[in-house]
Image (cartoon, rainbow, N blue to C red; front, side):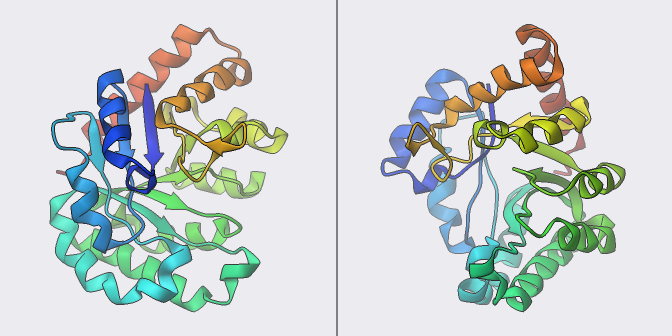
Length: 245
């Protein structure tokens, strides 16, 4: 099982959830929302060989935490994964747009200077701006668009730019999300939970419930469950080969 976008540190009992992931053999990309969360979040992966930690500065916190960019730069050599970074165009965050742009483009520049990273990217209501920034910084690394919700035209552009995608139960519940997933290259898709932010049945999704997305992909792609599992495992292995560290 693969959960390529999960906020392990934000669960009420993060160490317990991390242990449960390790016991299940779950591959997890544990993303952070601020550089100051890095040390504590890395500790969750102790003894768990299949948990990777990503260095992030979330766009919804950009206006509050932009002063942590020097810390982001200091920590970049400790990981090959960066996330969650990106832009958020929702009304409640659009007023901080300039701060978001500054943080995102600076983070991409830091990644480029470090020879590129694997990037887990937030693009809610901001897909075009995110793609513009990625196009301007092609050396920043391999972009994986988490819970992509842009238009079909933006999806086509993202595919042309070489983006990958992580999809979860929340995204695949809706018709638009399913149609987007149907059009994504199957060799560039991974599953995610986005827990504990994403919800299932009115409560926080667990990392292992990314497996629900596998069931949805069986229907969307029109292939058997073993074939979906094989594709996802192959994609994860390919991603490992593309890692820069």
